[in-house]
Amino acid sequence: MSKATATAANRGPLPETWAELTAELPLRPIHDDVEYDNAVEFLDRLAVLDERTEDQEDYLETLSGLVEQYDDEHFAISDSDISPIESLRYLCEQNNIIASALGELLGNRSLGSKVLRGERELSKEHIRRLCDRFSVSSDLFL
Image 1: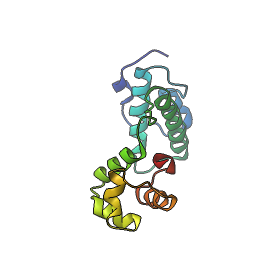
Image 2: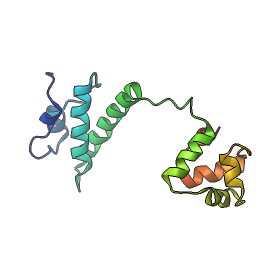
Image 3: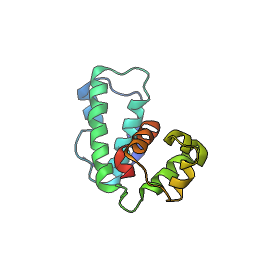
């Protein structure tokens, strides 16, 4: 397969059958940034369709897995240097949650600022509440 530019995948209407889809963009491991860009563009085109055929759904799922694999191998973000408190601060900032609101979530209004300053540690119950509120894994706070 020759390497094309990322815009090459953006030709006309999307195929509807598995054979047509794989003829336009064969499903295979992604080896470089050009293949990645082509796959992501094709994936985006499929994802925004109001209705997809069963073949398009299957193709979308398979292509998503290949893109995710490439992402994991080439764009992995290491969180080993991020402390649980830094993660919590970030989540609060992104969700516009002030220390007192965090404290209320944890069960005591004054607790939020103490946790954010590192004066108090998170209990298992606090971590459970945070995971529920932010829809994240408990690993973020351990």
